[in-house]
Length: 246
Image 1: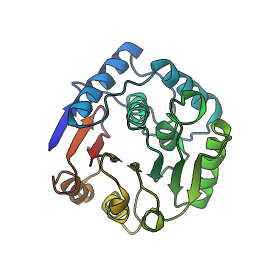
Image 2: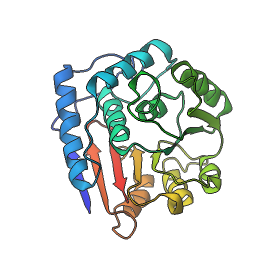
Image 3: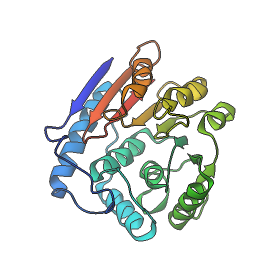
């Protein structure tokens, strides 16, 4: 089953890339749009577990205070949605591929570590292929999570996913492949991880709207009912997020 959630203003709602914590709209509007998206996701199979809005704000404040973020395309709406999905799915093991400075990673992992934690996880692993960016992301994450449950490694995501032996309860994709592959790498990473994604597992793919033609094979795969029970394109902003559930 393939569905689309689309906010009325997704084309007008734009991120200020170099001011990641700037408020783009009244908080009530941000909450309402994310709640509408979550309602569609719950109908498609996401666990009906509401997220704690105060914990989410505590998480956001800690990231604003402690993270070095040179730029990001992750909007406040997307940050909230990622946190809420993880708070609902509560993945024991999560892999995030292509984490840059760690902001998207902690938007997922922040539901289990730091001041936004609402459940206990096992392993939350961010993967960044550029060693210098992986080091910065790891420094950022350590400021919020001293436990090491959430960590960032410098690795090739396809290779890492292929050798990871534990179940992958949530897989987040935001990587770019080399040699012009771009977001086409999503399908390679997913296929490397696919047999470890259990029933109820969730796969999130950023740039579902602006990923270009290279993301289409990935979208065809996750929207095929033989691979996933449901897949929803959550279009809250100009980037979008494909949310697929086994």
